[in-house]
Amino acid sequence: MNFSNNTADIAGNAIYSEKLFDSNCYMINRMKSITLYNKIFQNVLPTDIVSYANDIVIHDNDQSYNAYPGALINIPISINDSNRHHTYGVLTVSAAERKDYMLNSIDWFINGKQNTYTIIIKGTSHRTNVSLTIYTTHLSKGSKTGILLFSISNPSKIVEREITLKKCPPGFELDPSKGACVCSTSFKRFVSKYSNGRILECDINNVTFTRPYRYLWAGLGQNNSLHYSCSCPPGYCNIHSHHDTLKFNGTTSFLISSKTGDPKRLCYGSRTGDLCGECIPNHSVVFGSIMCLTCNDKEWMVSSVIYILAGPLLVFLLYLLKLTLAMGTLNSIIFYAQITNAGIAGYLMIPCHDCGKCFHILAKP
Image (cartoon, rainbow, N blue to C red):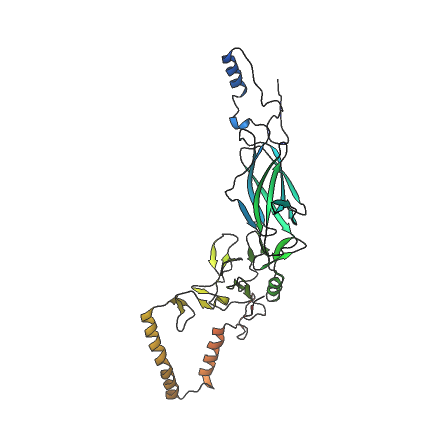
C-alpha cells in the first residue's frame, strides 16, 4: 500500500480507513512482525492512531452552568474513541426541559434562532472549546432551568449538563425580539438625556456598562435594585478618566479600565451608599471635611468638646466684630461655602463639559 502526497481536508493531516481497527497481522516469525510494526509506526505517536468516536468527554468540573440570555458559554469538549484518544466527530447540541422524568421541548434557541447546533470536532491533541449562546423570548419566573444535550451518532451517545438561564441583572432587560439581555431602556434614556446625547452601551458577557462621562454614578441598593445619578458630588466619587467601564459587585460599584484592566471603587476613600453619601462601617465623617475616617473614642471626645465650644465662640466673635449674617462680606463667604459644599456647579457657573444640564438627580426605577 503506497500513499503519495496524502492530505485530509476535513479533519487534519490524517488517513482514515474503516479497516484499521479489529485487524491483526499474522506472521509465522514474531520478530518479523515486530519489525514490520515498528517500521510502519516509527514516526507515529500512540495518540495518533484513532478509530470511530464512541464517547463524549466534557473537560469541566462543573456539573451545571449558569448564564444570562445572550451571554457566551465556553465548554471544553473532546470526542474520544475506545482507546480514549481524541478523534473526529460531529457533535450536536440541543436544549430540553425535564418534567416528570421526561425530556420536553423548551423555548430556547442556541447560537441564533435554531433549536439545535451542530459543530465538527476535529481529532486534535487538544480539547475543543465549544462556544454556545442561549436565547429565549421570555423568562416567566425570573430564571429557568433546562438541560443541554451533547450527542454523537453511530454509535449513539448522549451527555447532558444542567443549565440555569438567569433573569437579566440590574441595568439590563430582556429584549424579546433578540432573546437576549440588553441595556435597560430607562437607564439608557436617562444617561442620554443628561449627557448631551451620549449612548450607554452594555456587555452582558462581563455584566459591565460603558461610562459615557466621568461624573455618572450608578449602584445597587440593598434589594439589588439599580440606582443612578447623572452627577456625583465632588470629592465623593473617583472620576479618573481612564476608567471607562462600570461594574457592580454586590452593593459595591467598581470602575475598570478597558485598556489596563485595573479596578477602582467608584466611591472615593471609605465612602459607600447612594451617591457615595455614607461611610463604611466603623467610619465617620470628619468634622469640617468630607472624608470618612476610622472612629476613635478619644478623638470623638475631643471633637465633641471643640464642636460644643465652637458655637458660643462664633456668636461672641460676631458680636465683638459687630457682624451680621444678612449683609456684608461674611454673608457672601458663607453662601459660597454652602453652594460649593452642595456640589451644585451650575449655580456657580463653573464650566463642566461632561455634566450636561445635570444636578444630583437620583433615579430608582
